[in-house]
Length: 144
Image (cartoon, rainbow, N blue to C red; front, side):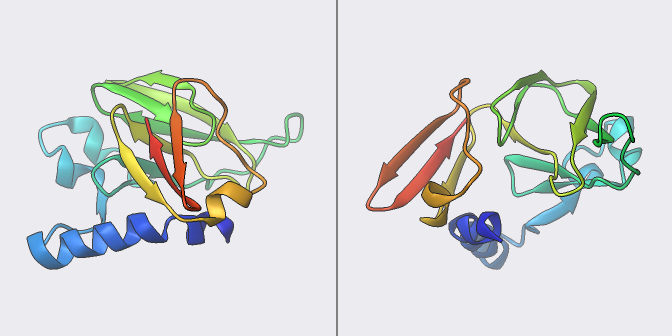
């Protein structure tokens, strides 16, 4: 719930882009990468705006790790886990282990994601691993 509220400025930006430029805020991967065969083989993930990729966790969790495994295709370029800042090289499939409450979200290098005030007080925080947060007046920008 906190993440959804923190993303309101980003969602507003995506809605404005949709209204003015007719670009859908949430798109299947093959909309952005029609020439990539892999984009057609990942129906469980989607582009969320121009800078984020999200993949649903839909497999059962393993009893030994209590984590679910999701395989996500990342296009060419550098990508970062939105929450931990871990770097992923694009151009292939990446395995993401998550609890059933977490969703794998990857940000393209150079992404600027405007976030609301709820981000600062949230229980989850970005680790300092290459991502920067700027805060002013309670608002934040997440720069990857």
